[in-house]
Image (tube, rainbow over all chains, first blue to last red):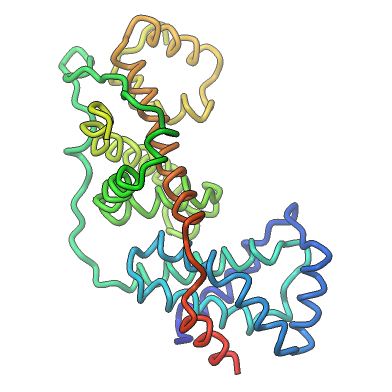
Length: 217
Length: 80
């Protein structure tokens, strides 16, 4: 239902515009129809974008019900602000950012749990600065691993085992590929903090994947 | 920086991967890679970790079905 997430998504969407990522002619036409209040245009927007937006909110929230709610809120925010949409932006980019905002709002309002850190998953070093346990080359290529459903599920399971604040940084930077500036602003952390967090998240995930990848999944 | 150890190499690995190091520091890191098989393996697996994260997400999106009909209906209903 529309709520705080919608309000925040509405206020933030303008700063998420990507000037170099302009609307295609067919999108401009759709926007005009939306602004004119054409019912079929709204239906087209939902039909075309609901699935990719749901994929984004699922990745961030890892909870089906919340992910669907976030998509609904994203569309409500978009409908309300369609008059302010700037054609310098692609519709998909604009909706993507709104959906990310809605999903992040849900993360923030989740009961704050005491989150464990990832220290135990970081590499350990001897007093002389060398790796305590030698790293070994992984056996299979990424492409081969990705071919198998079971292996993909295992990678997904490892990602989901990361503490939430690390997992979200990884999703926004490495999957959604949002810029460091945008992610730092959305998560209300400094860019330096974001950088440290992303590096730790990648290292922790690498540690979780290592036993499987050494033996090849 | 004339010499780095594994701890320094791995601490700044993200900067190395993202090519944010100046030429001199990068050369020092490259030198460490030449003499340290463990860090070479770590670097490769760090890159592969990023590729796996992206690859799994891309594959999930590729295989995703359409959005559930009830969600589509709910959004359209809210708009009305």
